[in-house]
Each structure stands twice: as C-alpha cells, then as structure tokens.
Length: 331
Picture (cartoon, rainbow, N blue to C red):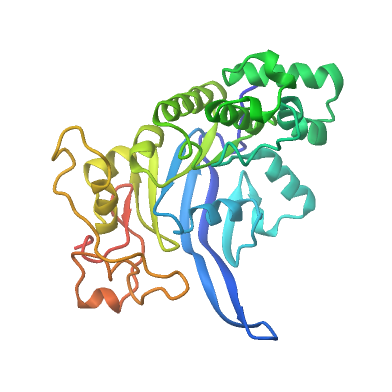
C-alpha cells in the first residue's frame, strides 16, 4: 500500500458549503408534497488532508445524511461539495465513480454491514475485482495484506462473518474500506455497537492507519468522549445544523454553545467538576417534521431569551478557528 497525495498538498481535501438535503413529505391519494423534512439545513465545513473532523450530535440530527450526501447516496437539495478538485454535485458518471473510489465508508453495525453469504476474501476483495480487475492469487494476496494491516490473521481469508466477534467483524470492515487506498474514509459511528474495551482497540487501529497512510477521516459519533481522543476538529450538530465548531482542545476547554455544554455534561467523569458546572437541557428533542422557529435549540435551552425564538442563528467565528451559532455567545 502506498501513501496518498492530494492535488492540493496540505490543503483542503473536502469542502462543504451551505449543504441542504431535504426530503419531501407527501400525503393523500395523489401523494402531493405538503412540506419538507430539512434533514441537513445549511451545513458548512472543510477537512484538510490528513485531518480528522468529528461530526457529533444526538440521533436524528442529520450526521449520517451529511455523509451520504457527500458521495450522492442521497441527493442533496442545494449547496456545494468539492472533493479533491471535483464538484461532486455536478460530477458526471466518470467523476462520480472516481469520488466513490477515493471515499470509503466504515459502517456502524459490524453485524449487518457484512454479507453473511460471502467469505472474507470476497467481502474485502469485491471492490478490488470491480475497480482494479484483480482475480485469483493476486486478489488473495492483496486481501491477505489488508487483513494483516488491520490485525487479523491471513488464515481468515476463507471464513464467513458468523465465525467472528463484533470487533473482528469491524476490522474486516476497516480492511474493506482500505482496499482501494482511499483519500477520505467516512467513519459512521464505527465503535458505538462495540464493547468499551473493543472500542479503544478499533480507535487505536484507525489512528495507526492514519499515521501510516496519511488518511483523512470524517468521524461521525454521538459520544463526545470518543471524538475528543480521535479528532482534530469537532463540529456539533443539532436538528440539521452545525451549532458549534472548533479544534478539539479548544472545544473541550472552552465550549460556548449551550447544546455543547449539554453534551459535555453527559460524559462520565472520573474527576467531578473537571468540565465545569453540569448543565442539562429540558424537554424532548423537537420533531424534525416541525422544527421550532428561530434558534432550533431554544425550547430546551436553559439560557434562552425572547429573541431566541424569533431570530435564526448563523454560525459565526467568535475566536480564531472557533465558530458558534448563538447570539448570546457572540456578545
């Protein structure tokens, strides 16, 4: 395996501007459109080559929809996605094929993401057959090398998924993601279904692979404790929008948005008070079918004032590299 070199050395590998992905709500016999679910509503971020960006938030906030929109697995409604010089949303068939060759996904469920009727050789080598035309002994040797890279024995090549533990299955998923030597790997909650002890092993593996092959990660999670260890930059999402984004150390030492404080309060602490005063959000997460006006977090925000329900919040830079969508934080 060889290290990857982006066209823009040490520059932005992925840039997302005002990404919006809406799903139509249809009712009645004629299936008329009566509204839209704004799963992703104006998201902006960029990832530099060799960097890890963490996208965190509660379930249903739009994290996975962002990831699927990046490679057009779901159609984006508006915005711009630029990957290594390619305008993804305007890409033709050949350009899109290249993007999907250079962007891999590690899925959340190690039990459901592997075909139970396929051997490890076929699972890991499928993309190599399709994109590289490898067959026979050449394919087997390549798969054996990939298995060794993720800490599995080459003797497992002819086994089936049911013969492995959850952690081993996820390592097979990592090997599959590495097969085409991608420039960007999307990690869609890759450790949330695993035991805590196994989580650390998979995270350390991903870190080691990043160092060895100069990989770039978009790491999706709902657990801020996981991304603190893994990511260089963290973007916090709520109801389809990024409400705060900063470098990992900066975000954890000085969180600004009330929702980020709420997520921080949910992290188990060995040393009580290490992260400051515990803050909790009241009420339930609003329905994405009928989101609140103004700041989407204001019905649950302990610091909300009258203007929060009237004025939509824009992500603004408060300090160098620290962005927040809260007018009270920008004072």
